[in-house]
Length: 320
Image (cartoon, rainbow, N blue to C red; front, side, top):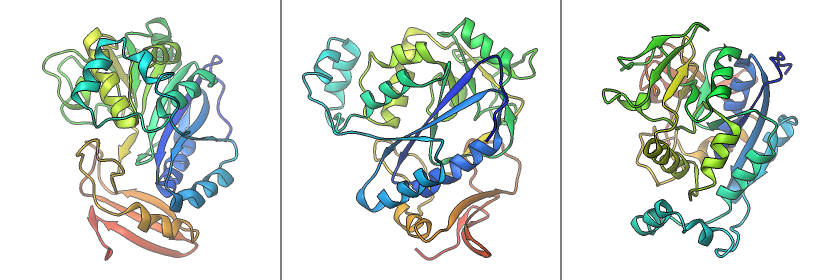
């Protein structure tokens, strides 16, 4: 896909995927179809169990310009975890959450990927989200982050269409909107200055900040870094486009770290069809006013002229 050149800026999109190659395929198709405004580098950080290996091989074959990195086995404790225990926040979490172990090399692989990436900016993504409309990243918004990297960010999954807008929500001259994350009246995503779903940060700032703290998957990455950013009062201002462009479709849950809502279609079920040549698509049939829709959408698997409805109007339509 040809990307419009924009003042030399590049965004490196780093996508986290675990046992969901079919959902990853839908994410990648939507990203490449909808993104414009600057150069785009796409990197996928992959964890998988054996039955999903073939699915990720299909991904690598379909997207030859996308870099796929597999999380390595954990490095030695003395070289990785121990040096970070000089940080009081890491010691506190190690005591409070003893069940959270660095089971593999996720943290260090991710930070190595960011360090070696081509981007001026980093955007994270997860494989259960989807870009539902075309969008362009304005140069003015990127320049604001470049000038104030510890204070500014761009958010693609919120916009004036999303409920519970902050009272301090204001229009920007470049066509988007901004708000103060630390207004005590803010709720939901408007009050959380770090996310792994479609938020854009200046590369050097976010990498140097992440290196200080221990985390072992995208969920703990988000919770730990968000907590520490809030504690230090960084990323005070969020900016968004004239509309949100990303929506979350939690068909399944692949980690027990959080107890988030999910619909309940297993990754194994979807993967069996992906290996047979089917692809996944989301059909939105209502206005988007929230980060997750619970009605007004279909989810299908399709191959040639054959379509399987997994979900109709927000409800599971297959026998599992």
